[in-house]
Length: 334
Image (cartoon, rainbow, N blue to C red; front, top):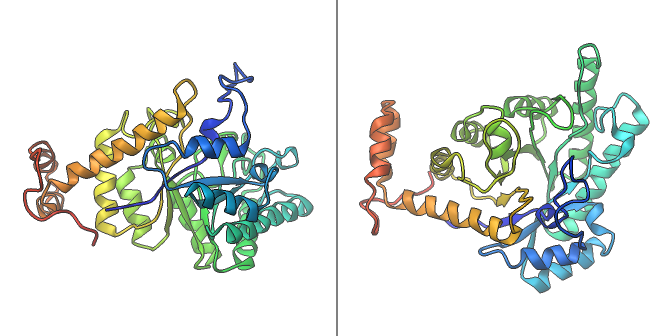
């Protein structure tokens, strides 16, 4: 299966951490980041943050620049976590004026997404959550969030709002920490253009199974976008894909095929000490290697194994896959 690959541009920034805020690389312009991203083997597009990555170019100018480089914009991410005004949340903030500003930020990003040809938004609400017991009114926070997402989605029904769950960081608890909570939000909003951006690393450190969550979202037509990265299951380390959870990713790709997901494969990595071009290229190569493994297996063998809950038979099929061309019917999307 041929999926288009994209990456966000954060890997090309200074790569700072809390103990080295200056970072390990010099800061460069958005234009320079795009030119570095272009060097990634197999890359088709980039993700752009709004408005921080549009200080040098308007959305129309950015679109022209990407066209010149042979790249697309896969999705636009409104910056919803770095404004001090949102210390108590953005779309769920108890202050109506602050919420209104946050809603406008999302609407402006939606407009930019249309100009860029992406028609898709990554809604990650890092500051919307809580840190202590008795800190928030859970009823009001949820109502505010549902109403705000609904208002944003109604701004343009042709733009998909891809809500991204993450358990924590920077808040101790995020309002939208897991896939089921995002599904609850989607259900409460009740609009077709609201779905989920599934980040594999966020799921891993929430102890969610990748393949299962992909199936649950796809069965409801709510898997709008995919972020690929890996970690040790204890934090969002944004590592090279498959460097820790190899077979979990093989299974995820199996169910991506079975459920017919045809959207973008996007990289959300943070290579602090590694060369970003090499690290991101490695992730694409790793996923393609996993796909070649699946290509060599008769899909019915795995389907029969999972139908009778036979994990050993499934593992044997993977281990016995021939090195050459396929041994029967190649896997195809259902």
